[in-house]
Each structure stands twice: as structure tokens, then as C-alpha cells.
Length: 148
Image (cartoon, rainbow, N blue to C red; front, side):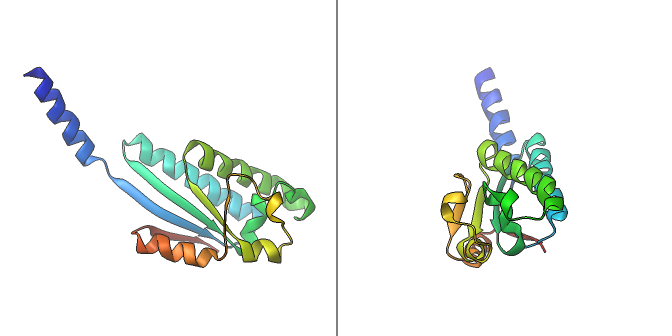
């Protein structure tokens, strides 16, 4: 009988867990702002999981947001932005590797910033057009959060 009570309690707890699905779309060229937003994504995900819920996040990067995906960002960003890009890159690395957040960068934006595909961090997904990916996530029920 005790087994059944624990099973029912476990099922009720499982059913009550909520899934938060969001795609974070970043195009900002303000390195400090981008760093703060990547930290905020990470903190938000931790808060959701601490409450026993599931966070299913993706980040799409294009425009001025793409230098953080490069392993040679120091060559392509102004000196005053390097510390911010480094911290943003540390956040997306943790998010991708520990939290399984899908990080997608736009190939057109890589090209515009003269970042070669071989310079992109290995856990980053390269998309021909990140707008298409963002739309696809929305079509699958992900909330859209933009960082401009």
C-alpha cells in the first residue's frame, strides 16, 4: 500500500512540474548589455529548475551579438569590449554544456563580421538564417525574448 501512495505522490509532483520554453533572440552590439542578458538567462534557468520546473531554452544570435561565438573574439572586438565578450562567452558555454541550451548563430552575420566557421566554438550551431530558426521555435510554442 505504501508503494502506491508514494507512486501517486510522485505522479502528482511530476504532473505539477511546468515546462518553460523560450527562445532568446540577440542582435545587440552593446557587449556589456549582451553579457548582462546572458547572465540573466542563466540565472532565470537556475531559478526555474530550483522550483522543480523544467527550462527548455534556445538562444539565436545575429547582428552585433555574434562575436561571442568566436574563439578569436579578441581580434574582432574593441579592447573595451573584450572583458564583456569573455564573460558572455563563459555564460553561453555553461548554458550549452551544462544546461543543454541550444545556441544558434546566423551564418550571414558570421560572414558580415568576417568570422570563419572554423573560428566558431564547437558547441555552437550555425544556421543559414537565424530568423528561420527563431520562427521555427515560436511555431513550436517557445516564447520569444529579444535583446536588441
